[in-house]
Image 1 (cartoon, rainbow, N blue to C red):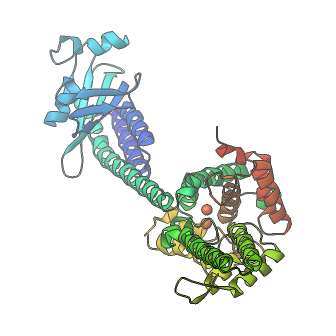
Image 2: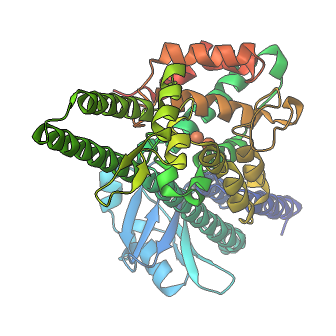
Length: 479
Ligand SMILES: [Fe+2]
Ligand SMILES: [Fe+2]
C-alpha cells in the first residue's frame, strides 16, 4: 500500500467515525438517511447511492432517499437489493449488463446507465438485516474489496442510528395519538367546547412564531425551536384536560337552575295555581266574593315570569331580586292542606346569582379544572424538552396583576408561553359559537375586551399587539 492510498484510507475511516457520531445525534429519519447516503457515496467513491429500509411487516424494501429518484418500494428477495436483504450477503458486480442478477428495467425507466454495483447489508446489534446500502458506478473502475469493507463499516452504525430514529418516530407518533385521544376525552365531556383545545394550540403556536419573527421590545431575543414549539403545542392541547375532573352537570350548566330543578319549581307553581282555581270555583258555588282569589292567581303568574326571566344567565335586575325574595316568603296550600313555600332557600339562592349561571361553589368547582390539569400533567414523566408542559398549562387563568386563579401568582412569575396561551384561550372562549350560554362574539369585540384587559394590566399588552398586528387571531376563523 502506498503512502497516498494509506492516507486516503485513513481519511475515509476518520470520516466514517465523524459521520457515525453525527448519526447518533440525529433523530430525524429523513436527515439521517440523507447523511448516510452522502457518506456512503463519498466512502465508496460512487456516483450514486441508495439506502433501502426493510419493512418486514409488508415484506418490502423501501427507499425515500435515492440519488436521482424518489420513493421506491420493492419486494423482499427481488432484485439485487432484495437478495442482499433476504440473505444478508454482500453482492458486488463488476459489469452489470453481463450479470444475470441485474435487472436493466430501472435503467431503462430512468435513463441511467449502471456499470457496476456494490450492495451491502445493514445489520442491527442483534445481527438482523434492517436495510441495505447500495452504491452504483465507482468513479473510476469497479468497486474493490476495500470499498466493500469501508461501506460495511458505515453500515453498522447507520443501522443502529436508523433503528433508533424509527423507534423515536414511533414513540412520537404514539404520544401524539395519546394527546389527541385526551383532547377527544375532554371535548366529549363538554361537547359545547368542541375544537377549543385545537384552536388554542393553533393560536398559541401562531403567536409564538409571530413573536419570534418580530419580537416587541419587551420580548427581544425570544426564540422557539422545534422542541419548544412542540412543548407549547402539547401544553395548549392539554390545558383544559382537568375538566374531566369537574362534574358534568356543572360543566355544561347553561341556566341558574338545572333543568330538573326548574321542572320542580314549575310543578309547584302549577299546583299552587290549581289550588287557587279550586278555591275560586268553590267561592263562586258558595256565592262568596272571588275577586281576591283571582288577583292572587294573577300575582302567581307574574311571579312565575320573574322566575323564568331570573333563571337566564344575564345580569339580574335589583327589582327581580326583591320579587324573588318575596316569592320565597310566600306559601301555598297543597292538596293535603299543608302550607309549602313557593321557592326553597336553595332555589332562591340559585336564582339570585347576580351574573352568569353558576353559584360560587359551582364557579369554584369549574375553576378547579386548572388544578386538575396541573395534577394530571404532573403525573406524566415528560422528556427533557417537554418537562415544562405542566407549568405552562397551570397558569392559563392567571392574570398579570395577580388576580387570576387558582394561585393568583404575580406577573413576573408568569412565563411568556403561558401569557401567549392566556390571550389565545380568552380570544377563543369569547368567539366560539358553540357554548349554549354564550353567543358567538365578533372578532373585533373580542379583541376590544382583550385590549381592555391589557390596559388594566391583566394580559400581556406587547404580546396582544403581536396577536392583533400579525393577524394571528385570523388563523382559526371558520369558513
Ligand atoms: Fe381553562
Ligand atoms: Fe381553555
